[in-house]
Image (cartoon, rainbow, N blue to C red; front, side, top):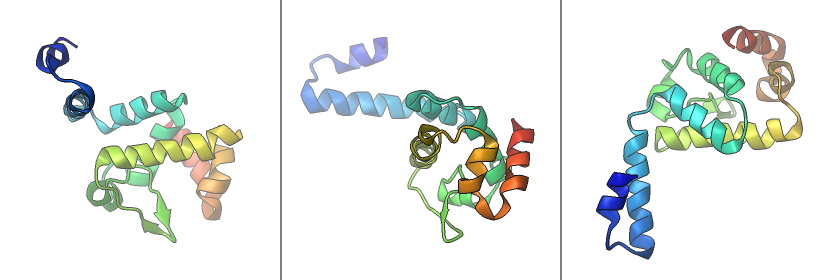
Length: 134
C-alpha cells in the first residue's frame, strides 16, 4: 500500500489504474501456482480444496507439457488438445472461472459430481484420484 501510494502521487485516472495493475502483476510474480489458484478461488468465492486437487491430477503435480508450455494448470482442452494461455495467470483465471461458473454454480461441488462433466470418459477413476489428492 505504501509503495503504491508513494509512487502513485500525481497519477490520475487511467494512468493510476495502469500503475495499480502493474503493481499487482509484480506482486503476483512471486506466488506459487498453488497460491495463485487459491487467490482465484477466493475471488470466485469457492473453496480451493477441489481445484488444487484437480490441478495436481491434471498436470502431474505441475510437471505436464500443458502446464509447463501452455500455462494450463487445469488440464483444460478442446477435443483432447490442451488449450494454450498467454500467461499462467490467464490459465489460472480460465481454470477457476470455468469451475466456479460451470460446476460449482450449478451444484457440482464434489469430485464425483464434477467428474461426470469434467472427465466423463473416466469419471469414477478421476473422482477417486481427485479425492485422494484432497
